[in-house]
Length: 146
Image (cartoon, rainbow, N blue to C red; front, side, top):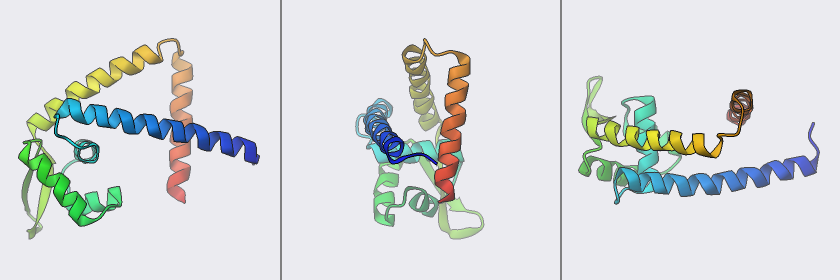
């Protein structure tokens, strides 16, 4: 079991990481569209990665209220980055999905993101990178259990 000093060091490094990620998400949101909020970008990513889903799934995933999700969904719809279709299982509900424009914009940002990672971690060996991915996977899995 880790001692308090190690846990405090981990918390500090995770705080630094979170601040950097928030800043990067905001930058990436603006690359997709200048008017796109970071949370809307994250929802667009969730639809890209997780496939078509109801807004209620986004409410659960992001742990924010329905109104906040609705506002971000409306922005994504207006920008043409997602589309809404009736749910075939429940015509009262709608399914949200990313549009070809949304995919195109995210793929451009992802390509730039990979270049940046390669530049910043260019001196890391393949083994170092794989080990880091394994440790981050273990960390994220452990947090999900709680």
